[in-house]
Length: 117
Image 1 (cartoon, rainbow, N blue to C red):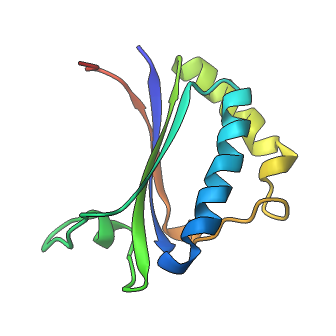
Image 2 (image 1 turned 60 degrees about the vertical axis):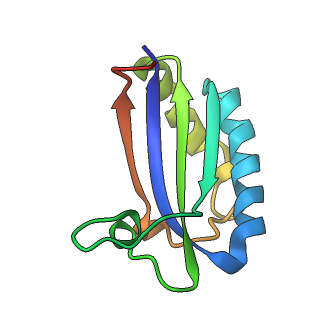
């Protein structure tokens, strides 16, 4: 089964185009290092919860939008090797491709796919 890295972030709504360019540039690098796909989703119907929610999880401010993203890999092993190369790639270093959002509020994790229907 494939392996998935998932991400949730709060992006300043005014930075939408900068974020999309950042994501397009990153997608090239991730795919060169073994990723199968990279998907970026701009929040459209992301309700604030009473106990938990995407906006609460990333401390989304009124002038921000929740972004939900994922990267698929052929396996955990390919992901581990590929992610190490991605982190070293000069094209994704902060001075070359700065994140147009607060990375401290980024939530991420790796997931083993158990159902793919």
